[in-house]
Amino acid sequence: MNRVSKIAAAMTAGLWLCFFGAIAQAQTVEEPSYLASRIASGELPEMAKRLPDNPLVIDIPALGREYGTYGGSIRTLMASSKDIRMLTVYGYARLVGFDNELNLSADILESYDVEEGRIFTFKIRAGHKWSDGHPFTSEDFKYYWEDVRLNEELSRSEDSTEMLVEGNLPTFEVIDDLTVRYTWEKPNPLFLGSLAGPRPNVIFLPAHYMKQFHVNHADKATLDKIVTDAGERSWVSLHINKGRYYRPENPELPRLDPWLNQTAPPAEQFTFIRNPYFHRVDDRGMQLPYIDEIIVGISSAEIIPAKTGSGEVDLQARYLRFSDYTFLKSASKDQKYNVGLWQEGKGSQLAIFPNMNTNDETWRTVFRDVRFRRALSLAVDREELNQQFFFGLGRPSGNTVMEESPLYDEKYASAWTELDVDQANSLLDEMGLEKSPDGVRILSDGRPAEIVLEGAGSSEETDIAELLKFYWSKIGIKIFPRNIPRDNLRRRALAGETLMSMDLGLDLGLAVPDLTPNELSPTSQSQTNWPKWGNYYDSNKVAGEAPDLPEVVRLNELFKAWSVSGTTEEREGIWAEMLDIYSDQVFSIGTVNGVMQPIVSRDTLKNIPETGIFTFAPSAYFGTYHMDTFYFDQK
Image 1 (cartoon, rainbow, N blue to C red):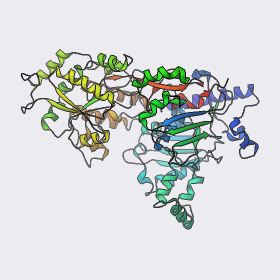
Image 2 (image 1 turned 60 degrees about the vertical axis):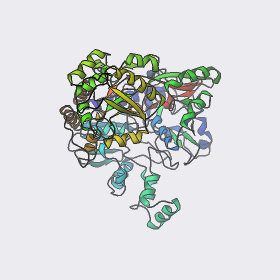
Image 3 (image 1 turned 120 degrees about the vertical axis):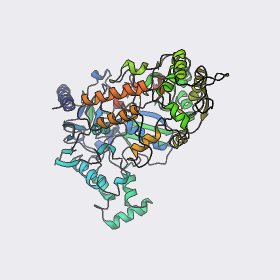
Image 4 (image 1 turned 90 degrees about the vertical axis):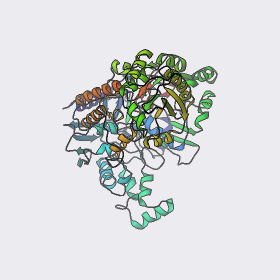
């Protein structure tokens, strides 16, 4: 049994003992009053018949939390109807998920087993039910695989990267009603991590519901009428829209999440109610979630901080920035809310990306010289940036993983980040970039070293760009900040028109070995430091350019090795070498990470950790902190 399987087995055994110990002490378990009328009418069965035979038990004391009580509605704000997908993120019900220690363990699944890194056997919880009470079984995996993934019309909308190994899909088997297996010829390290992601790789659908929208199962005349009545182009678009799982827009779609959307878009407010069949309980046997409802209001992103400060929400973090902290804190006492500070999970709050694929041949040569990238990094006063913009609460760092990541090494964070203007000037002198009488360095073609630095235009970026302008003037590099929309910035970079850009740092500041290191090598055209090399990869060599810089070629080799690695230990070694190369070569220039993120919560809302890392991946914002255990103190 490998490490992953041992973790799953140990946690399953421990949870069983914990659960049965709780039941032995408490013969009766309180039902949520929210469901009382539905239970009394016979619409819903009692809790024992709604839960799986072996529900997932959350050890509340082990989390450092308090036992909660049922009830209450959490009000929160989003900037778009599409952002109701954040409830799928926050609820974080996954086949396999990350725990607080960033280890993978079974969640919706009862258990899983991994052999040779390529054979994955999944065991479903007996008695687990969809939110409409229908059994959740291997049929739901089979339907997705045979009728969606292998259907050429439906699979066009599927992102298959995590399901492909060297271009090949796995063999899928139904072992029995509660067991399925996926087998690849070679290891697939992407698979488990994709199931645990904030935007999960969904490999099941409620077959009993979705078959009515599928040409292979529905009566043609009936299906044609449903397509027409729904205003869809075809049964394919109908099936896609009815079956969206990440963005819960269809209130009728049975789900496995803690809260269920009741409102079809478009709407200015969405109501999510508790799932009566949710598979988790606390260690007293009380069904989670504690909270009955989540009310999502839709508002302009620009005014969400003001609405938060006026007390219109019970829980808010998205659309708030550290610059809002003083205002929010000053209003907190009157509005009866708390303002916590978690860390953001980016590798750098802002990073600078020299475009090594720019069309300008002279600048392209300069950017590909590591001495230039190192010089720019050495000239940045990160301590001043940290003090001036983040009250000294962030951490000066290169664009790399955070201290909280198990992959962290101080040498990555400190590589070429210590302020040293003299060394920076020496490196540029070595390159032959002499200074003109006005102090600006001269390129080999006689032009002054002037760079347009393109950014997405937040006030924070604009202010930091002005400081960078001052810092780099000391080494003879003149920059002109320019604000453009982020999508335009990426298009310009891919076209080779951008020289240098400023954007958010690495998404995976909280990286773990079992998550892909794709940000550290050219894998996407959206990477503005090497967009054409990234396009070469993500177009399968049809577009873009093949990397020709030796260190980048090595990063690609390492990424390919990770993509077929069989063990966590092997992946950890690959991550370490990639982080070492990326930081030493300064392929992007980091500034500060660990910047504080305001977390506003009603003062009666409990079990919200005082500290945490607010990031999309891998912790799914509130997801791995068990939002289903948050509760209102109703004393």
